[in-house]
Picture: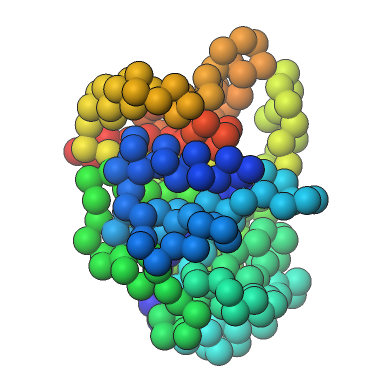
Length: 269
């Protein structure tokens, strides 16, 4: 049973701007087969970052992640052991996922199979050779973290990594990318805007954080539209940054893309 985290999805009414940001700052590559009227996808050689245009009634922000499996029927059989876990077929226009599913806590993710006919663009072109700046993890807030960790281990074969004794998170790896499962408590948001359960942030691993900062300064100097949203300014945003640091102990530097998606950066040792 082999599975890989093959994409992360963002919804944004500035989706073309975000594509330029991740290409310029994190050196992600865009597929020549993109259909920009639907979405723009960039990749790090292993994971695709799918940036979708926002539509009426759809919230913006970090939306979901996707998992590629060897056999979807076997995956469905394992999911059937978990009440409230379910799935639906996606439209054939999606080049990255045939099925959208939910775990028993209602967290949404996509499932694709390696030979699905609708796979195209960056999801076929990703070779497994990862770029210097690459997605390291995607983080999920959920009410029952222990049970959800067990779900992703049982259904997809993700492997639980060791963590510090005082770290309540679960870290589930496909061998290259990690799904971080964070306990959700509404009391964590005292003194700041209340967040719901769901996607929390995306993590990048880079060759050098100082080099990333220098590149970001240069990018913004050339194109101010690519300026990230300030993080940690003011009392409420300071509380949000403090919480993010506690909830993502693997992050060394935190920033936001130009449309408010939180990013945790770590430096490869």
